[in-house]
Length: 364
Image (cartoon, rainbow, N blue to C red; front, top):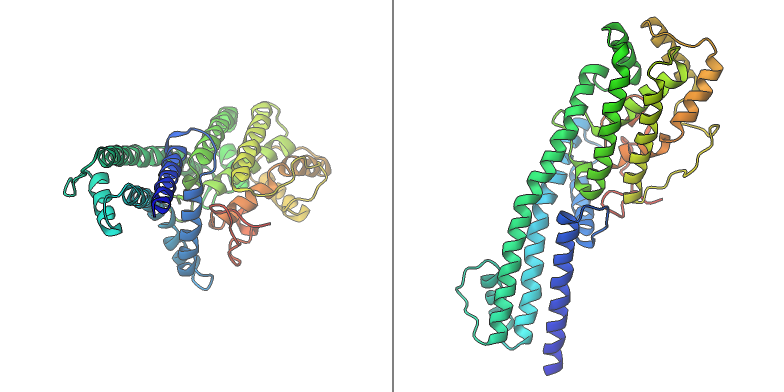
């Protein structure tokens, strides 16, 4: 019996340590690290939400359901931390001989929530009670800091997504983006615009890997989504570099495309999404030559100056797009992005939900 009680103490101590480490990795550590508990919780919650957002429903209905996925799971996460802490300390209280399992559960809850209705008697029991109360207060403090941080970053991300809605239409289109800037006289401002979006990609790379739940927080407007915005601005920059007969803003556009595909690849790495690590310029992309030629016709009609060699333009565009083509489509599928040309319209978003193994990762 003594051996069983010692085993309960060590198991409880291990579970408490793992729970605390999970909370630290999730909330405090500013690095893209995997924590076992959020991964399990988000996978289980996703399966439950997918039962409600089944493929026979309209996208609007599915979007309304999935909009609750990340917020509900984020609120469940601290609850799970609290419950696991109570379970771990219940085992330790029982192991040191406090009483029965039910009595140990009550003293654990009393200590964690600092209620004090179940007193600890011996020195070891008081030490456990004090340590559990400290953990309880720490979890509350983490929660108070965690949610405002998440939604502060979310608000910053969505500001640029909303601005793109004005500049590129709804859903965002790279073609519309370039045409509108030409028509309203903002053509010379594109260099500044590319730099702002380069900074946006740097922000989401850091935020979406440090706080992965951000990937699943949907925009306030159902027709908008951060990955559609990312794809549209990358396509706009790629078209500008490859097809436009104007060298003034091409340097920052090239840097933007590189910053963009590096950022999206880092996010894809977090979810374990496979993609070509070193694609060749001639590798196939999801955009067809027919679609590309139609895009050039639309740009020409919109007054955008284009180079005369369409074959060279296609090769150059495909050479840029291949760097982010598969990544942007995979991420659009994972976050169930709404329809957007050249992004979520060809990513199997409307098809059967893929199997997921890590948060929202698709099994290869």
